[in-house]
Amino acid sequence: MSTSTTPQAARAAPPEPAYLIGVHQGWHAVTQFALKYTAAMSSGTRIAYAECGALVRVSKHGPYRRGGFPVMHDPCIECAWAVAGETGQLDEEIRRLMPSNEDREVFTRLGVDPLTAVTAATMLAEAARSGHGDYGADHPATIQMLAMITRHAPVILVPEDCAEGSCEHYPPGYDPLTGKGFECPRPEASAACAACSLQAGSWAGEWEGRYELGIPAPCAVLTRLAEHAEEALAEAKRRAEAATQWEREQARPEPEA
Image 1 (spheres, rainbow, N blue to C red):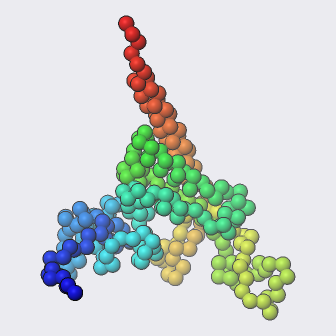
Image 2: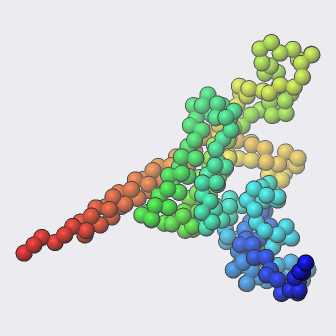
Image 3: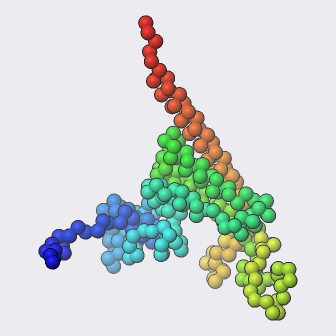
């Protein structure tokens, strides 16, 4: 039986994570390159630039994982898209825009396309990855537009009693005296743009974040972004076809003299 005599210190150290978690009004991604230019506070806390460009505190929570704690609770959208673009995971981020089946039914009932944001992000990502778009998948311009699509994606607003399960929108045959909890079908729901709508500030106390004035979805911003994404993909395809045609012409044999 043989044993290793390699000192613990001499063994290969695990690779450093590509991104660490930063915190400032949400959870951010900080690259190893950015860590080279950190500033330290008197408390020892490191300050660095996140992928979105914001100055953040380098968190004690370690590696950045989009779907992990604590990033999942309040992610910086720009950082999330930047990491997705740099790591080839745009499709995973696009899937996060997909509404649930229940929400899709409500959007459809309200006359709102539930996939507007998903379709726009998909077309923009396809154009960026084609090699024939104006910008690449990890270019700041692409990330900015994808983040804007996310922020202006439609959301469903419901009255307070419906949200808390205290409404009387009972399903057929339901007895409120003997029946257990039920799922409100949200007949009074409305579709709004979260970014454009007015939400209560800190003055509202426990009601901070409540929607005070909803702006109907899809808003003008998302509509224009969707139009731009369609135009960008069409232009990328046109350039790809032109490039293919040029290569074919170059491959033709020269006519004999």
